[in-house]
Length: 227
Image (cartoon, rainbow, N blue to C red; front, side, top):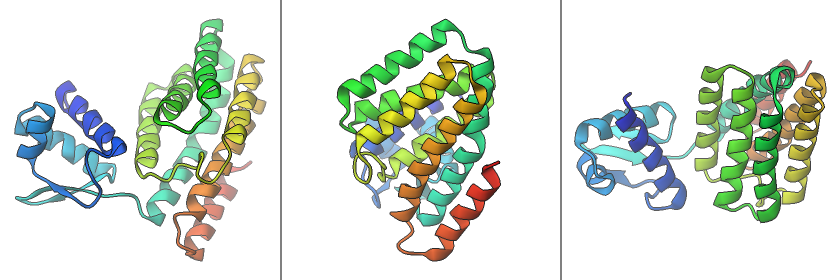
């Protein structure tokens, strides 16, 4: 996907998040092209990418319908994050620099100042996680996990502040940053896993509609991801 299509995909994700594009509504390529100032080709490429992420459903000769993740989708996304991010955090601790420390602290300060679960709060949260992943040195992993995070956030089931006080999330991030600043890889990995498991528990429990099999599947993945 070229840079134009990537930008359109990002614009569509932002529009869904902001509510400018509504869940369940069918949008044609022409309509989206007019909305985002692009021709049909990059719009179609962007929609194919978003379909792969589970954000839209392509309907042949009609357009794309905005959809959300079901309970199984939430379990799969949360499981992938728990499998991938903690070891990446441990790797980052071994190679991070003072400049990385400053960048992490700057994003955390934004989160702490806002402390409201707003879009700006979550944007800083996303940048903080992205900084850690990129510091690990695996840029493909950083990009992949970034897409997972965007898909989860677009689903609208934020764990903060609907189901968890912001203070708890902030403490989780403080623990991660402190371990990284101490260059303690094991502690950083454990702190990241604790944070992701806590968030995943909330997201899964509130998206499974009391489907015990999905909760059991989430628990099975946690057992695999936890040393």
